[in-house]
Amino acid sequence: MQLLLFNAFNGLIQGVFYALMALGLALILSLNSVINMAHGGFLVIGAYLAYTLSPYLGFWGALIVGPLLAGVIGLVVERGLIRPIYKRSDPLYSLLLTFGLALIIEDLTRTIWGAQGLPLEVPDIINSPVSETYFFITGYRLFVIGITAAASIGLYLLLRYTLLGIRIRAGTRDLETTAALGVNIYKLRALNFGFGCLFAGLAGVLAAGVLGLTPPMGNSLIMPSFVAIIIGGVGSLFGAVLGGLLIGLAAGIVTTYYPAASEAVIYLMMLIVLAVRPRGLLGEEGLFE
Amino acid sequence: MTAILRAADIHTFYGKSHILHGVSIEVNEGEIVTLLGRNGAGKTTTMRSLTGLTPPRQGTIEIFGKNTTHWPAHRIAGLGVGYVPEGRKIFGSLTVLENLKVPPARPGAWTLDRVLALFPRLAERRSQLGRQLSGGEQEMLAIARPLLLNPRLMLLDEPSQGLAPLIVREVMAVVRRMREDGLSVLLIEQNAPLSLSIADRAYVLDDGRVVYDGRAADLAKDSDLVNKLAGAGSKAVRQSA
Ligand SMILES: Nc1ncnc2c1ncn2[C@@H]1O[C@H](COP(=O)(O)OP(=O)(O)OP(=O)(O)O)[C@@H](O)[C@H]1O
Ligand SMILES: [Mg+2]
Image (cartoon, rainbow over all chains, first blue to last red; front, side, top):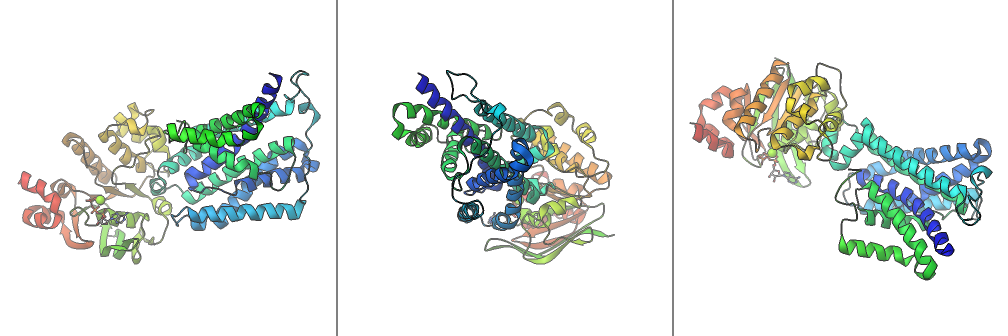
């Protein structure tokens, strides 16, 4: 029982990272129509910048500034590289472009920070176990859950109640009409891409506190995050979060009984969902409806 | 009279298909101009060229004295060009109020309150999703939305399409009201007699070319000509004649 709880909780934390990644990916997919293969790269950028900045800003400062910088870099990348290919309707272009970008970011990270793993120091107050029996429930892991919940709610409020959010939702549905009504869709898409990358950066900093930093740290998260979107339903941000948590939890639970299948179970779930409900769990509706 | 919109010899394509073959039209300050023509004549394509959604490959478009030929759509709208697209294009998953908040409000007489006062049905249903509205309500919303840009020029693509006669009359009353407010209007219609009755001037398009250009009243008198030129719209002429 203890082992099951241990693995389930580990899986849940993993699921939280999937959810954060999937949220950013889904935002970018729905408004920018880009399958962002470089999303793991933005996770790495957020994590390593937080690592470099934490001696100066402390953990808390780095937790905020790292993701923000990942978002700003995302914005610049969108302006410089992604924007010129929007007019090509074939998704292959953006797929190849962001795939290349992912490789470049990984190699740059290796060049700047080295290939060996690095630790991200987490303050003691949030790093001690909450109880002795459940030693795996550290304060930090609860903190990760709390921050992710706060960030998701923040995004929800932004999309629901701000003018920017209303226009992002409108653009997701009908970009052309949104533009004809006077909305600068170039700015809108750049901001949206930046938001998506900010979420990747946040996942990176939080994950670094648990797993440490390595240049390919984003790679193991990106495929399950795509699976999370497919299970949750393309077009639904809430579905992306749900999908992420579900597959993390499932992988954790399966680890207890049959560790070798812990990765395969994610893809098995995707196949089952696709067979039973091709549009995903919440796929019929759009952004938080 | 000064032309606030002038399209000169525009050629517009969808991919390789050449749709507009040198269309020239003008709208003067304070005018209602109607654009007629049978199905597939190129009316919508003309409007998409003017709004920047499908920019022409040849020719020039001037709006309010600026050469907007290759401007992106949002910049053209920002000049004060309101667009009511064919098929209304309401954001179905947004509420009525949210639909009205999509256009960045430009300062002017039209405020959210005033727009809601003009369309009481929309005010009543402000929290409903766009897709829950009736066709008539959606059309009202499609017209109300660009008003928040405080446009000086309105482009309407078949606002009466698929609506009951009573609602059509209401839509036309709103169009007249716009002109009284000093707006210039370019109106696409299948229903030729209806739009000729409120327009000052008319253009008829056929196969991507302007085949008639003159006073709306003159065209309205000559139902045979309407018949010949405007195709589908002429059925209504025969019925009413
Ligand atoms: N997206 C598109 N791609 C290719 N061809 C198109 C496209 N949209 C329209 N066309 C073609 O362009 C021509 C003109 O179409 P357009 O929509 O401008 O006509 P219209 O006068 O508005 O007709 P209707 O009265 O049916 O609305 C038609 O032959 C149509 O088939
Ligand atoms: Mg049309």
